[in-house]
Image (cartoon, rainbow, N blue to C red):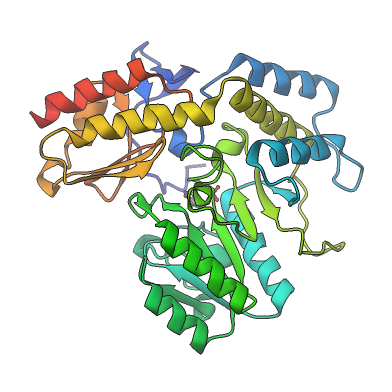
Length: 374
Ligand code: PMP
């Protein structure tokens, strides 16, 4: 059988990884500032993480959700503590799209309304509702719920007010920092406006934190920078450091009932062990503060360099907007300097490294990009 070839791949095969370093099958070392697209939060093959998953696998690898799983409660408690959302509730799934799908569905169950407000350039995943709320020409699906989605321009408070007046809005879904859309940071004022309109109109504020959450921005949730509480936070990527797990953090005002949400694999033993190990390492190694410090340092230094149009981001979620004629810099970083980065549009370099990135590793990147821009 052949692969259903949907990914543009380069022919590098990674066979070994540790921290922010990865090696290919020829023994070549690379600096990983992409983290498998914001997935590697605590660094590759962290010993505590490997140990916790291995120990769990040796005890029990899987059993059904309909049997009591103490690990899920332990994870909920720990997540409440580390995120500061102690009075919220946790539902576990397997991916970011599934988290958003469930969040949008739950919002509609909660208030009996259907219309979803989403934003231009948003990315929320590839399942039915999530893709309908995604504004990306490459993945518009022929069968979805787009009729119920209203796309608004980013940061346009007036358009937001009008949309609320004209529609029975069930939910607003927003990334605190748009990732795939090119690293666009939502202002505190915009998020606060969404909060107050949701309160006024009994709509649900969904904070898509799949990419910008889990400490990446220098706060647990990027929406925290605005001092705003969402009704539902969705998470995945960095939550499992590579082990597939996602989740939704749900305000106490939502009532659970049997059959409302469900999943076979969501919250399985191994995924919970992985997610617990991630939170333990985040706490022990103070990684959220590290993301803020190293991220601020990187952005400050990048802003001193010539030719860059704009540096956007927070913490270790950084977009480097280059003029179109410099779109090749990303390739030079990979093939000449052996540094993996991400991209959004060909000319925005995205940095989504492990939250444990060191200043020395940041300097290695700065020296490389300096050479390419001079
Ligand atoms: N939301 C955001 C903000 C994302 O960046 C992504 C993935 N790029 C998703 C949702 C979908 O996550 P997954 O690929 O795990 O379904």
